[in-house]
Image 1: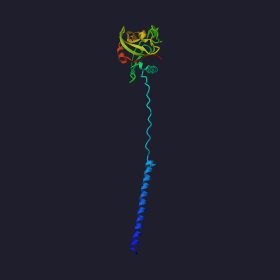
Image 2 (image 1 turned 60 degrees about the vertical axis):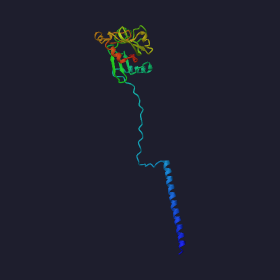
Image 3 (image 1 turned 45 degrees about the vertical axis):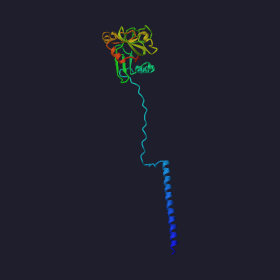
Image 4 (image 1 turned 90 degrees about the vertical axis):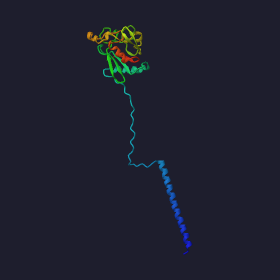
Amino acid sequence: MNTENIDARSRRAFLRSGLTLGSAMVLGSCARSVMTEQSAATGPAIDPHFPKAPAPAAVEPVVAKAPVAPAGVRPELFQRALASLDRHGSAIAKRDVIAIADFTPFSAKPRLQVINLEDGSMHEVLVSHGSGSDPSHSGYLHRFSNVPNSNSTSEGAYVTSNYYVGKHGKSQRLDGLDPTNNNARARAIVIHGAWYANADMIEKHGMLGRSQGCFAVGETHRDPLFAMLGEGRMLFAGKV
């Protein structure tokens, strides 16, 4: 047998096998490249049996609650006072504490209520109404008036102003903010202490005496009241 022919055939077989192996390697590399591109485009395969991540919990909006009237404060007047506080805005510089003069009850009841809006606490004292608001001296306020020389109590929102010393000692001026009490400064409607607003008047006469339209409180309660209320806060007078 011719050895040269055998060697030639062997070389041709080796070359064919090398080409086949190379083609397979190229095709395998191309297939891996295509799969990699597809994975990058579509993302990793998802196992249908793998548990899904929980959906984020819905966040409920926080709704501010309207302040609730403290125990002993008439809710209707409390809401009217808060509405006045909002309506008069910057005219009332300090908004943490308000006072409500509730002239609905008999004068022997504590009717001036100082309310801390931040912690809900309340302090109340006796307060007199004007003689023009109770001409028969029944102990009940029957009508409000803003008319000069009427000696009547005026309803509405006031802002507490400066202190001065007058015939009733230390007193505090008030400015009326509503059409129903805007003559308060001209009428000299103030907060002051008075003997006829002391608790012993109730023991002797069953009711308090009357003012000339001012918010008269017991003499021993005047200074603590001034300390709680201060200047630049709202006093709201009304009844239901």
